[in-house]
View (cartoon, rainbow, N blue to C red):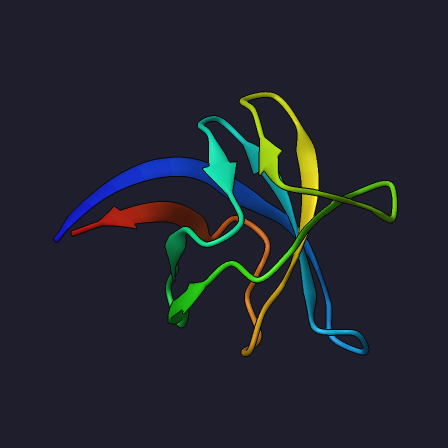
Length: 84
């Protein structure tokens, strides 16, 4: 499996399980992501992407997006898109 860095975690909202992500690459619903940091190691499929509370199917570099996550992530964690 190959991984390409696509962004950095800007914030995490624990009460709703959402990470705010500053994108440096492309991401779309259905992509598999890997979030890595000092204490973070999360791999999951992206179920939905939101911008300003509006659902979108794909996001481009430079966008600030929200993604629902299954575990806690931390500010500064690196996010990678995983390809088979």
